[in-house]
Structures are given as structure tokens and as C-alpha cells.
Length: 119
Image 1 (tube, rainbow, N blue to C red):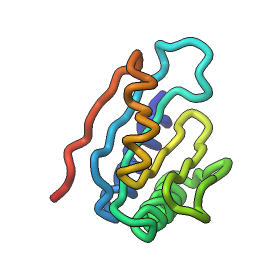
Image 2: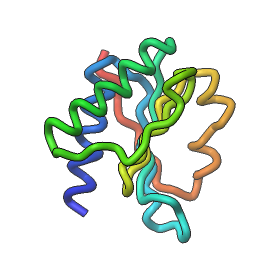
Image 3: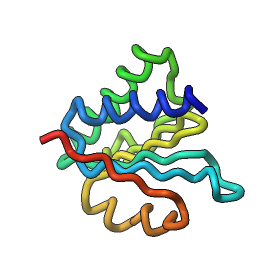
């Protein structure tokens, strides 16, 4: 599990590098039949920032851990980018899309942890 924790740390670093906001980690390990063990959810203020955050995550994680995402979806519209790191799925949203899909509420049985913004 240490590798997963390190992966999450590096994902968060990548988000913060591009000023991503409202970072939340969702620990799904106590919930049965989930597609992964953790979600990392954040937002950017514009499609360009959402793309920049996703790129920063990819670069930071690859440089620090050597791990690449299995898949990345949503880059064309850049309203919601999902990055699959097997045990961890990262969701980078525009604020309106995040409110609409409300993953934190959908997965409210998960242990949610907020990461303070770096302002």
C-alpha cells in the first residue's frame, strides 16, 4: 500500500503545481466491488487549466515513480478528465461539471480527505 500512498502524493503534487483547487481524496478500500481503491478529485478554472493539471500529473508521476496512466479520457473537451492509475483514478473537473456529477456525494461511504489549497 506504500506505493499507492506515494502515487497519491505525487498526483497531488502534480495538481498543486498547476494551482488545482479543492483537492479531495476518497478512500474506497472499505467499499466492496469498486473499480479502484482511491479517487483523487480536483478542479481547474478553465479547460486550459484542466488540461495543464492533467499534463502536470502525468509528468510528475512518471518522473517521480516511473508509472504512467493506463488510460486518460476527456482531454478533447477538457471539462472532466479521468486518469486511470489502476489503484487510483484521478478526476480533474471544471467546477460546473464537478458540481453536476458530485462524486463526493455519490461515494459518500468512502473516507473523504480534503487537501488544503496552496494559495
